[in-house]
Amino acid sequence: MFKVPPVPAQRLPALLRAMPKAELHIHIEGSLEPEMIFALAQRNGVQLPYASVEALRSAYAFTDLQSFLDIYYAGASVLLHEQDFYDLGRAYLARAAMDNVAHAELFFDPQTHTARGVAMETVVGGLHRACVEARAELGISSALILCFLRHLSEEDAFATLAEAEPHLARIDGFGLDSSEKGNPPSKFERVFARCRALGKPVVAHAGEEGPPEYIGQALDLLGSARIDHGVRALEDAGLVARLVREGVPLTVCPLSNIRLCVFKTMADHTLGQLLAQGVKVTLNSDDPAYFGGYMNDNIRAVQAAFHFDAATWYRLARNSFEASFASDAEKSGWIARLDACVAAG
Ligand code: ADE
Ligand code: ZN
Image 1 (cartoon, helix red, strand yellow):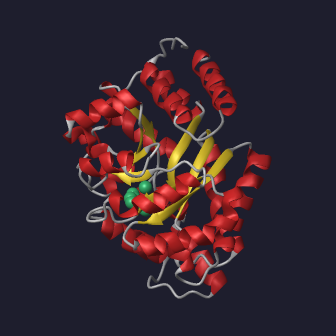
Image 2 (cartoon, protein in one colour):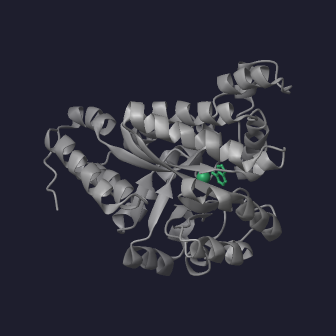
């Protein structure tokens, strides 16, 4: 394993910006900036219940996950055409590349679009075109993970999966998101069995607002390869031991957890304790347009609260590549770049 050289404290911020990293928990609809919401509303003739970008932004005062989701789904209603999904994906990937994100696995929520009459092909087609072009023009690698909305029924999820099946060549995995409380992973056990039978990796949001038992269910009943959030794992010592033993990655989203009141302040966040106990933590932005920051903003906020050393930051970046769904060859290439970047200080 690469030995991390000591990095002087004043050099660390530049290193954290420059080091290559992967983003594994980003809802592409959550990268829809207020300016783009207004531009798309105008382009598509959609009426918004806000008078201005500023008025919309000032509504971003969330008290919990549901208070955010209500605004997030309303914002997504301006996305209608293939070009809209392309523009959204392309804007996020350009922004991520600026933070030296080498690889991003994008969640998308087709049910919030198909329910408005938008075809699955429109959503997948636009996002896929953005991924292909961003790779060619910016060198950023990406993948698409279709998420089922857990507040909707199993039947709805199965219908969505059937609509997705003609597009499987452009879908790299499946996930589970939306309102966690009262919608346990067990509700989607049969849907996820079908996803896995199709040969795709699966992930699930669990232990964001929901109890630690939901993390166990996501592993045992869904076969989740990673846990999205998972920050409530710390309430169950046996579960933490299991996450460490099995090397289960957590895709932690620090700014999101503060903005959705999961923790009061960054200093209260459990990510330091999870890391110290040996859990494979990764850092991510979740819904950057709503929570005050993209990848490097999250890194800066964590560093301001925790003052990690270079070896810990190396571990976090390396975890992000190891936990990705990319090939072993791609992972080795990114980790070699990470090693070179850290060695150069
Ligand atoms: N959809 C978008 N962001 C989400 C989050 N943080 N939790 C659950 N569902 C989401
Ligand atoms: Zn999320």
